[in-house]
Length: 296
Length: 283
Image 1 (cartoon, rainbow over the protein chains, first blue to last red):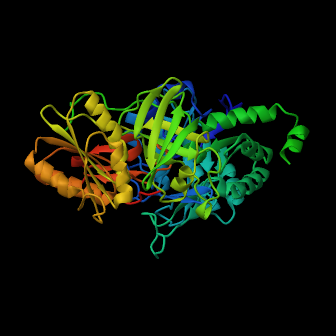
Image 2: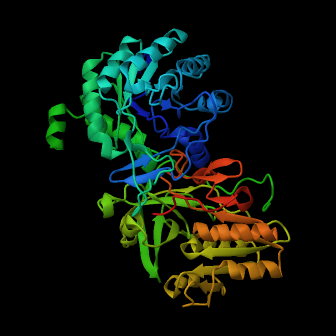
Image 3: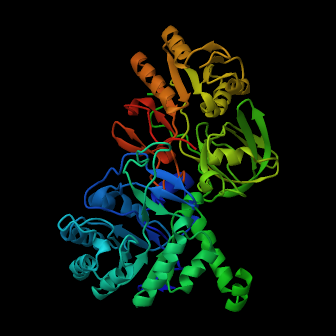
């Protein structure tokens, strides 16, 4: 298949920040490359400056899911370009680099720096952060999102994917704004804001106080948002949110997604992306009527 | 510090997928369960201190609070070669929905397993004897480490602390006669494990300490070893979603920043820590 002009062997990506291919290679060795779980690898989000991330605890298991408060630890743009990107280029699939800027200028610097590298096939904009100049969460506001995309669109010919946040009053309006400003695709959903307390206390469990909920618990919300966004834009939609099986992935494709991403399920099994891709191929080989009959 | 600088790190690579294995036995050891699983397709020689992610292949979810959802991390207690693969054993205590469900498993039940993961223990530097110090369920990785050191001809002292006699049954899994203390005095002397450890290290400081246990105990060991200038390796625990560096959830603070216990641990040199009181552990 082709996604924004990039050839992929299949439609399964990883959600940004849910798979560290370099750490996984330390644990699994070159077998990871021989049996790589995804058809396109999306990096963890890179910021302009290095970040340590949030103080622990960073995780809370919730019913059918996980609340995380990681805080975007990363080496910063220079560290990523020097240390990580050459190693990520050894992966057997195209590379998408996720970036987040706290101002439009910062975002522009990130996109310019990443786009200059030939290892990179696609760029994803993580807009789930406040613009320090306006105080607005970029991805929660159509105008902010449009301004961000318009600022960086002239800087690169690489496909630009806007990662939408579900924590917006109308994600589809943000998607339309991104499309009109020149985005090549949108991906959704990012995590839903969530919170947990230390059992028996009034204190928040997570070091960052709140976090993002993911996993099967969010799948129904994600499917609705992907369906609604897909109906409003003509650019490709990458759907994600609690996908744990080929049948789940098929649902997202059925409501209009061009590709899917696997996130939290990879925490339970690093090969989940491969399994889901294989299950999807088997489902697609079955005539739709028969598949429908089998599933209900 | 401990071990030969520049030597390859003690890490056996894992296959990059979760495996469905079969529970060979689940027997009670006092307050604990000792679960043995036949791993037919995993590496035969994990390194002591490494861990596996475990989840029941059936009925994982729908327990207390509609959990568990994520797999749970366990250091392996022993790995024994068998004709059909390797028999891995894990010591666990029912402290939450994950360990509760795992404790219910019986012979023949399917188990999801990923590993071995992380880095294990490094042998003591020449001239230093190994002192293994376990607190409660933290005795688990010291079992295979004791076996490993004994096979290499290293002398090994074992000191163990438990809450009570029911927990102290775990000491019987060790070779020889480990020193046992309990918090309530129901087995051995009534003491914290740092007391016999302190006596041993004071008598002969040419030692290397290997410790695993709850955060407060590890902090006691860390502080004691720092004071006595004895090198120590701590097998730590932190809430962990994936076990292979993907989620960034299991970080602990070191003198130089956060490290992920799953890929840079779970065994760390005590000297890199200002404190071993890591928040967020538990099952």
